[in-house]
Structure formats: structure tokens, C-alpha cells
Length: 430
Ligand SMILES: [Mn+2]
Image (cartoon, rainbow, N blue to C red; front, top):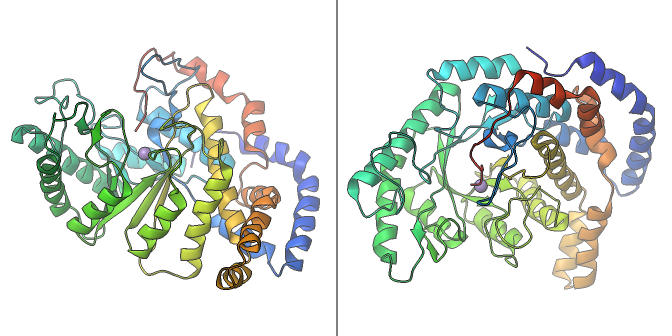
């Protein structure tokens, strides 16, 4: 296996911080043990946790106004995989990569498997793309794809999704995520029911091609690129789709795809209750779907989402196995730094949710003690679990401080000499 960063350098950096970490870890362990919590059990769960990195996330994103590329940006999927390997090597929290077709399409999928093996990376869910036109494409998606009024355009979109399944089968993926930008910009532009029926028919055709051990996820989004109505606009529609399609179909929740005040943790609980929570795209947002870094705006909300996930995990809810992925747009930061920091934010929320005193919380709920129920959650949220995350990383061969180590090694400047500046590219917003 090829390490992107010299392992000796990582060990050298860790050596400087190791004794402080041991002291902090022991102190936190002592504190948690007084609460009846075994720090080693939490650390083991964090060490085993993984969140997928989207291949498109390692390129600089942009808005419809502009994109400002950085030094050493990946030129193609093989460069992207190398950047993903840096994230995994330093954080040990991102063992898989989620591909996007056709952006990541290669002549032979075996090349992807070989590169993944070389770098120690696996492949997560496949992502189809019917929200933009590709060079040489016969039918345009200007007015939609799977729900288009024209049958030939719908057939083309269905065929593309089946192609994604075929590539996924060749590289060991087990899921297809379908997000469509279909919708309308004017009242009256489309017939809501007919448009949704066409979408469902197309999804049935894709579903029919799904291998037995695969899952299909539909991803809802309130608006953009359609600004009046969206075909898969919210979790209710998403649930209906998953229910209509069958047992292999699930709803995927992207944290940024809701109106600002929506209670996302409650949506998560509802989907868990009905066995239809299939996956997550983690990010954060302030005003709308602005794809900010995970945990950068509202880490408490991220924690509350994980509180529901951990509740289901501990209760061993049947069929509960959501796939986790980061999905954000990095417009002003080095994408590798943002993705490392976001992966750690997801781990942090998971660790905090794992130390919630659930029997006390249940007592508060049964006794209608609203204040103490809230305090019970906040006590866990206020706990600084950083020593657990750092210890899990170090034990797995990662860096105690991934961002500092990444900066110290000067990866960007070095790789910039190999990769010429990419002037244009996808904004990577899905
Ligand atoms: Mn997404």
C-alpha cells in the first residue's frame, strides 16, 4: 500500500503531542468513569467509525458567480483518490470514497479498484448525475430528467442510472444515490401529479435493475436548481418514494436540504421508526443549502441528529444501517483540510451522543422533567471528547492533529508542482 504522507513524519509529529494526549485521555477517562462510562468502549466505537468522502469534495467548489481554484487541485479521479487517501491516512475516519458518474468515469472500472487498493480506500455509494448535460448527450436535461415530459429523455436518464449500478458492481459498491434537480420555476409550468408519476415510473425501472444486496437512496432537496417546485422536495415525498419502490429503497437525508428552521433530528427519528432511513449527507447551512462545513454553524443540531442515531444503534433497531457521507462545497478553504475537520466533527457528535445518560434521559421523559431532560443532553454535548478522537486516530495510525500535520508536511505545495492549476470545473454542489 502507498502512503501519501511519510509515516515517519506523522510519527514524529505525534511524538511531540503524545504525552499531553495521554494525560488528557486519562483525565477524561477518570471523569467518565465517575458517570459509569468506560472510555475504552467509546474509543473503540470511534476508532471503528467511518464516514465516506465524496470524490467531488476534494476539488474546490464554487457558486454560480465564480469558482476560485487552489494550488494542486485534482485533475481527475486518480488525483482525487490520492487526496482522499491523505484525508484517510491522517484522520483514519474516512475509509471509503463515494464516486460520481460521469465525473469519475474511467475506461475500465478495474483501474479504480487497483488505485483504491493501492491507497487503502474502498468505495461507498454511487452517485448518478442527471442534473447537467454532458458533451455529446442526445437529450437535454434542461426541463428535467427522470420526470421529463419526453419519454426518450427519461429513458436516457434511466439508462445512465443503470450504468452507474454496473460500474458500482465492478468496484464493490453496494448502493446508488439518486438526486434529481427536476422541478419547475413557474406555477403552472408542470403538472405536479403527472410529473411525480413519471419520476416514480422511471425509478421503478432503475429499481428493477438493482442487485439483491444493493440499496437505492433517493435524496430530497427543498429547492435549487428548480426555484418554484421540486419533484423530491422533502422527507415526506422521499418516504413515499422509498415505500412505493420496495424493501431495497430508502430515504437519504442531506442536512443542508431543508428550510432553516426544520427539525431535522425529528425527521431522522420518523424515518428510523418506519425503517426507511438509508443514509446521510453531512454538511451545515445558515440560510439555505449553502453546503458549509459540517458542524461549523450548528454543532448542537449535529449532536441531536447523532443522539437519534445512537438511540437506534443501542436499541438495535432492525434493518437500521444508514450510510454516512460528507457532502459540502469548499469555496474558501483547502478541501482536504475542510474534509478532515468535518470528518472529525461527525466523530465528535457521535462520541458525545454515545455518552448521553440514556436511562436518566428516559426517566426525565417519563417524569415530564423537561429541564433536566435538556440538561441531560447538554451535559454530554458540553463534554470535550477530543482526547477520545485523538487517541482513536493515533491508535489507528493517524495523526493526533491531522490539520497541523498536513500543514507541516506541505502537501499542497508539493502536489502543486505535479498538478497544473485547474481553471474550470464543476461546482460540486449536489
Ligand atoms: Mn447531498
